[in-house]
Image: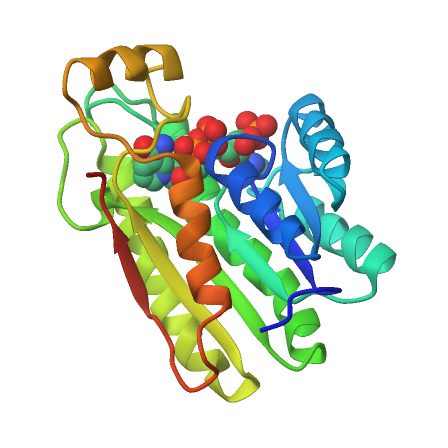
Length: 239
Ligand SMILES: NC(=O)c1ccc[n+]([C@@H]2O[C@H](COP(=O)([O-])OP(=O)(O)OC[C@H]3O[C@@H](n4cnc5c(N)ncnc54)[C@H](OP(=O)(O)O)[C@@H]3O)[C@@H](O)[C@H]2O)c1
């Protein structure tokens, strides 16, 4: 699969897993749009990708707001003329027990992690179809597979994302748009309640973590898979 000249949209592309995926796509010659709420990390990520010889565009937007997603996709396709890949990676952890979590926080977690993915897919699909096919990849979590105390909104959103992706895959098969879900174990990023520094200390004490590049490897695998094969779900655990 020659990815040169193709265009990708990576939500949460300004940090952690999303940035690693964006860098990898850019290294294959793809132009990448990086979507997130904060402009500063997006601009820094664009500068880093450009310094590596890649092409990238910052798209400040909130995935939970349809108008912002629609405008961001229009900006990206307006500049590069096409869209081949959407990675629904933006997410928040929404940590807290049901009793201690406010209605607003529970709702926001679902709106970002699940409805945000719907918004991005809805805006991207006409462009993916016009490109003759492509990929939508959802970044889910081990919390989609079993419940975790204190992560009810997160687990529900990530389980919802996996079933959303599976349904979308069936809707888009005839358009040669492959929809896949990557289920992730713990990755060395600032996600959740622990910083990377705290996670490094836990790693030194024996806890296992993947690196963001391990997730980029999984995306690479999906992008280079034969047209005859579809990976519905890829489970990735630390070793
Ligand atoms: N790290 C792990 O252990 C782990 C494990 C399993 C799954 N995951 C999943 O991996 C994905 C990436 O997480 P990460 O580890 O790379 O953490 P991260 O660095 O905190 O990345 C999350 C990204 O999502 C963006 N984001 C959050 N809310 C958004 C919104 N409303 N609109 C647009 N962008 C938004 C953030 O940017 P802004 O704040 O600027 O918007 C940030 O760039 C998440 O979906 C997470 O659930 C992570």
